[in-house]
Structures are given as C-alpha cells and as structure tokens.
Amino acid sequence: MSTTPKTLIAGNWKMYKTEAEAVELASGLAASLHGNLSADREVLLLPPFTALKAVAETILGRDKMLLGGQNFYPSSEGAFTGEIAPFMLADAGCTHALAGHSERRHVLKESDRFIAQKTAFGLQFGLHMILCIGETLDQRTHGSVENVLKGQLRLGLAEVNKDEVTPEHLSIAYEPVWAIGTGKVAQNEDIIAAHDFIRKTLVDFFPHCGSNLRILYGGSVKADNAGTILRLDNVNGVLVGGASLQVESFAAIATAA
Image 1 (cartoon, rainbow, N blue to C red):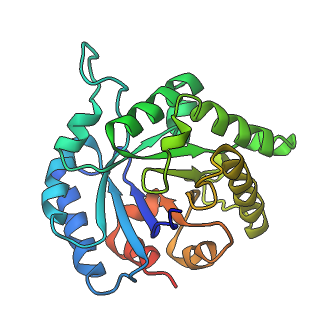
Image 2: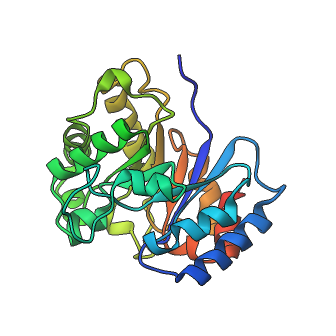
C-alpha cells in the first residue's frame, strides 16, 4: 500500500511576476528554505507560464523544491491558440499542474467536463495533478457544502482510470471560494469537517489509496495561521495565493510548525 506523501506547501503565483521578479522570488525562497525545511515537507512553485523555464533553472538541484503549471489544454498538440500542452509544461521543468481552480471555474467559466478532461489527460501524461474543489458562500449558506464537494469530486474524476490513481500522482485542494483572497479564513471546525468529508469520499472512490491521497487547504493562508491549519486532521498541505508572492511570508508558511 502507498504511504502518504510529504506535506505539500504550494504557492500559486497566478498572474503576477515578470521573469526577473519570479527568479528573484524563487532564489530568495531557495536560500531561505535551505536547511530549514523539515524532511516531511516539500515546496511547489506555480509561476506564470512566461517564468517557468527561468524558475526551473533557479531551483534546479534544490532538494524538495518542485515546479508546476497553473493550467494547460488537454491535448498533446493542435490549433489551440493561446494554450499550452502538458509536454510543454514538462519541457519547462514541471512535474505538477492544477485543474479546477476556483478562478478558472467561476471567472473563466470552465465546465466540470472540461476540468475532468484536464485532470485525466494530465494524469495520463504523467503530471501530478492537483484537483481543486470548493463551495461558494451562497452554497455554504444554503447547506450545500457536502453536495457541492462530492459533485465536484465525482465530475472532476469522472474520466480518471481509478485503478491507476496513486498518492504520488493525485492530490485534492479544498478551497472555499469565499475565503480566497478575501482575508477570510474558514474556521478550524469548518476545515476539519470539509476535509473529513473529502477523505471519506476519496476512500469510497479509491479504496486502494483514498486514505493516503493528499488534501490541501487553500483560502487566505498566511504565516500566522498556517501552523494551526497544517496541524488539523486530514490537512496534508496548503495551496497559498497572495502570501506566496513574498519570500518572508511564504518561507514562514513552509516552515510553520
């Protein structure tokens, strides 16, 4: 049976940082984390496409520092103007990728079917996929949290070969939409309840490895709350937005007790 992978501290830089700024940030993080990152943790950087290669070269050879893509199109190649393929991410040094991030769901209007296609295609290609799920404030207010989470999991994983899923290739990120970039953080009991439900659902979906798949929390994670969040049951890492854009704050999150 697979064992639970290391705690993952992921920084999603979204549409920020020029190549030079990204290199400066990656260099600063590498220096700050050198010798200070515990053996059971690893750090994933998710820069914009234009900075991937430069960041890859910056962190090359750095133990426990990984690179990922924020998005890709589920095809090996083709006439898809403005898109990039998984092999292009890999060529730039990526081992990981996101699918289903709330901004792509709610701002860019990606459908559950398209998210499922990306998740399955990325896994088939060999990327470690992080499937993001989470409810809106309206859905939480109306008591639909569990239905939303189960539905997004079921639909997002609909095209995945379940027998081939392992903790080394798939993680889930729970990001309550109302807590992303708002400064609002879900209460500990809310995070525990959501992660517990996700865990039970994953065990139902993947009896062979569901208990060991990583579940990350994302939603206004900062240096002053990361340690508490990381100690909660079934929290196996964090997906960090704004606080990952500064060396001091992201390094503090990565090394939070």
